[in-house]
Length: 111
Image (tube, rainbow, N blue to C red; front, top):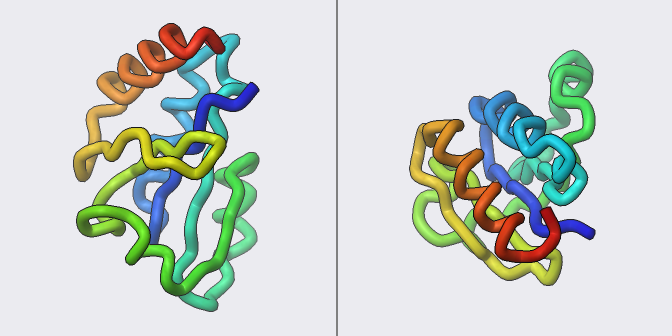
């Protein structure tokens, strides 16, 4: 069962962080998915998509308006029903993200 999706809007700077935070969940890795929301019509380079294998991509030019704050500065945790659960600070500390996700997985009964 999926607890949620880590979503990042705009650029690609934190895609590596999202991947590492997800991998750090160990046995619960399958409970967290990654989504890169692209807000323009440009397609990501093939090399980049290979480097972030397993990350889902979606193109929606008006997506940024659906997220609170400056969407391009944050990583968001969204539940399977599409509800925003958390917004991580710009340039988040990956170890704190790991701890937050571990707590959510623990109390959700999934992880």
